[in-house]
Amino acid sequence: MSFPQNRMRRMRQSDALRALVRETTLEPGDLIYPLFICPGSGVRNPISSMPGVFNLSVDEAVKEAEEAASLGIGGLLLFGLPAEKDETGTGAWIDDGIVQQALRALRQTPAAKKLVMITDVCLCEYTSHGHCGIVNKSGSDFAIDNDPTVEILAKTAVSHARAGADVVAPSDMMDGRVAAIRSALDAAGFGMTPILSYASKFFSAFYGPFREAADSAPQFGDRRGYQMDGANLREAMREIELDLEEGADMILMKPSMPYLDVIRSARDRFDVPMGAYQVSGEYSMLQAAFERGWLDRDRATLESLIGIRRAGAEFIVTYFAKAAAKLLG
Ligand code: PBG
Image (cartoon, rainbow, N blue to C red; front, side, top):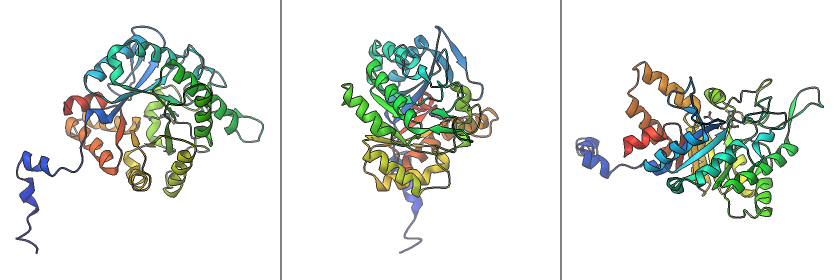
């Protein structure tokens, strides 16, 4: 049977019919809101390439968390801008590090109990050279020294758990970091702290604006030696498989929009909770189009997120979290 017996438009006649047959849902609870924490108090420094996103001192971050909780947002992803950077990223794991301070303050905030508190575990915001690991200068070419980096990442994850993180999320792409973090957490008494592994993270131009927000642009070279080549889907599956073997509880895919096929493949292949990160560049280009009046702000915001959910991600890290939650609420 075909047309005129079949008319696809029958089911598109009203809001109620369209809602009945809608295949993909999007709720505020699916969204994770990233925050960039900086020293000081009363600080709300705008990020020029990311309208609506700020570097926030701890007290301001607490206010954002309260608002996020009242909007029904699922959780926060915390990044830190330390007062000082050094060669080995000491600010990432010290007890009074910036993320650790934020976690303690958020733990004192009753409304924040509704939020899953996730921390980004990486060194690039804390190293003077802006790389995600320790620089090995012994060879002729610079390289990031994997195994010593993994030790520092494990120390960082433990210090986040100690300060109150619900979930730790390594985003560095070093080999073996999930296993090292798992055993360090277990040894420190945090056997119940889950790991959300940025399992498949591609080397991407779409992280550009984040580097302004987190002040983490590499001072030399680039991240191709540890982040994945954007052309590779099979390799992404292998990265995920290895992280799961090492003990990752959930996986995070990144970026989203140029990699929706990778998200779909991962969803079809692995029965684990999976999120996707709608990264800074995805946000900035939409914002730029909104500012010019080229795209409808509300519709394009929700469409970009539904697309990621339809590709198979259960939750989405997005700078649109508050805006989207308001539209959905
Ligand atoms: C840290 C990290 C980055 C992002 C998340 N964690 C930057 C990078 O890898 O260069 C990017 C997030 C975004 O662009 O919104 N390694």
